[in-house]
Length: 390
Image 1 (tube, rainbow, N blue to C red):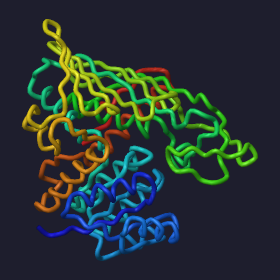
Image 2: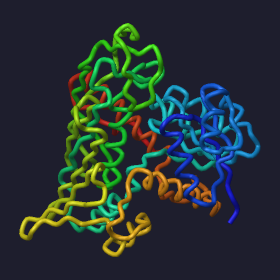
Image 3: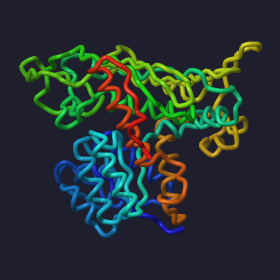
Image 4: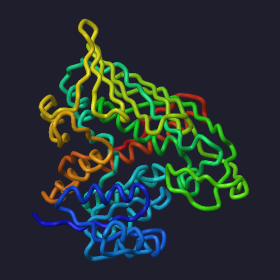
């Protein structure tokens, strides 16, 4: 098997996760990283034992050794980096949200299709073993027709007015924060598991902290700051902390979700339940190795993550025996495994079905987020039917 060489742009939390997941594949060599400065890139390259460091992402894209670019930059750079990578004829794995608007995501999708490069978006929660199990059971009709899809995605890392991150600034993170950052994950997961696309939304969003105190030294995502009051600058905040969304799905199923980055005690609490005509199932990202199965005329069940018990479609996503937990890093590795297998097999994304989320999914997520934001502003149901994500 030929080794594929990858470069990762962005040296923060998720960039490191990309490097670690790629190394688990065995057939991929991470040959370069790029950071916000040469010094930061060199520090991260040394820590991760990556041979080449760049202070300018353009240098990494131009590196002839790099065949696949992983874009882990702040949101406002996604379009520029992705389009440059596509123009260079290289495959691209992008972080979500794919862009800060549906105009951007449509442009990137069209460019990737015209170039024929492989394109992927890191909606990694799809790739947990029991998420695959849930999807397989629903696709097989085990729960009957889907009626309800509901859940939440709750975090607390922006609970305090001294919590600050680049995602809060619309010039860097885009016009939506909670919806684009974690709401996009939930909506993608709901559609993937249920097999149904969201067709309309009715939303309410709120900014509970209209002013925040930005620390004068930068903090990593999810990192506490612990500085004195004099070490902060007070700034007005436009992006949302929270949202509640009613959902309509194609085919008539309904749903609801709550999205929050200010819910104390919840670190990464993504839950999803799907209720069918004959049964229900539910999954919790913070307890990812069990799947709850609900019944009317029999005792409810809890299915553990055990390859011997899983549907044939889900079994390849579980790599350890029952009782050996698999979670966040494994979902990312599963996604990258599918992307690189597709590349190694010579897959053509214009014609061949991909078993990973692509720019099509990234574009649809942008359409859903924009519909949510428009619904909240106009205080009405907003449909997605007038725009085509395909």
